[in-house]
Length: 466
Image 1: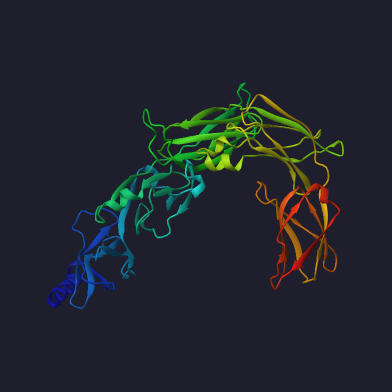
Image 2: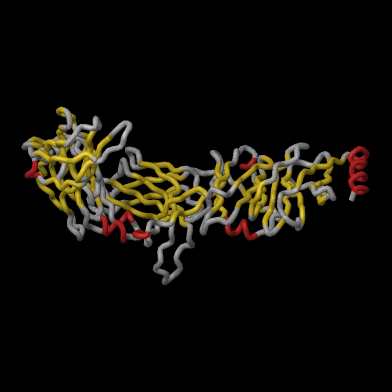
């Protein structure tokens, strides 16, 4: 081995070769060392070996471009990115692959690589088909050249993928399970194409443009269902936009995948349309599942700018596979205090009217959507004013959160009247959790939960500081 190194050093001087090497990883027997080239060369590739001094060494031509040294040991790999003549720092992984990009768009694109996976819904929402995403934390990407990237990591989560994006190219999605299955010595050739924006228009059932519609695009991560298959494929968020005054919208370039466009409009309804690969324009026609309308008053006078939120029933939301079926439209009242919103296609739920600095009233919606549901005049009335008296004053602020067990949780802050005495305005009845807001030492009150009713307005509630 010593003679071999001497010969190699002579080759460096006489034939333009160079040696790159470094210490071996702290592991057992080495199963093999290989050099992964960033680009193809006409001549032979670098030769790598383990020396008697327990180091690794690779002999290569001086014209050899950057590459990745990969040391196989104990079913794992230790890899390092080599740039010029510096010995790379080795990193540990379970797998590694080199991606080589090609295509005219590659020349002008600054490619970005990320690793993502779908997040399983909570136990109460196991039927959900629209999933959140998260980043695969133990996967890494290192560019060896502008058109080549080395990726490595440990055990990837199920259904995880590698995503390649740039400002000028269409996104690329590659399943990590497929990349992990191949040998590190086999580069993956990836075609890069120019991105094309998607143009579309959202219209109401009548054909009129739907201005201000929310457009959400989901990418299917499961194959489209076959004939007779009733299981809808799962999907993840890909893009969002909104329609202009003429109902038009534009989406960023989408990749070669199956997509779904879902559009919502507060007055005109909802629609879901597939977007097949290669599509560059589409028309989304909304379908209304019924309108809920009414007028909001305070003391007989109409209120402008009051929030009207269509809140789904919690049980229906937890059991729905498609959460867009249980969500209706939202709005704010006009100058006459009037509002009109679409009801959820699945029916049920309630209108939560008010909030913020205003009292809250809730109006139950019919379980079966119908043409028009008239809530009539909804008078918000007055907030429930209570006086909170503490047995001692810890010098803290006081606040309440609630109503507990209802949708639309609010936090209201009390106003200090005197030492240990506060006034607190509750926007609606129900169970409220009272807490102290302290700068230094932590205090709590007892009881923590207090049931508030409209008839309690003006009364006094005494609490013990602990």
